[in-house]
Length: 111
Image (cartoon, rainbow, N blue to C red):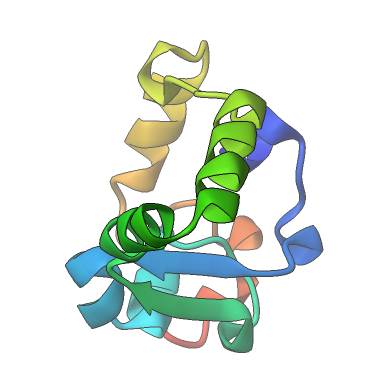
């Protein structure tokens, strides 16, 4: 995703992990295997059931519904599996820890 968006991991201000998976996964372990971008652990925030919270907010507030509608127009859906280099990236990421440790320098001490 970072390659597609031309974003460097060190430019990522915050990584939000949602849902039960996001709540219970260990951030340092997820980073060690390349699941999370190589960012400082304090940039990872677990937000629980984001979909349920957003739905409740929209049910209670016209302002939130308007915001959700605006955001939905600004979102770009990216089908990663259809991206040209996805299969190669995916195959590289099958190694645990990630085969290209230069991309995950914080994973080196963990691995």
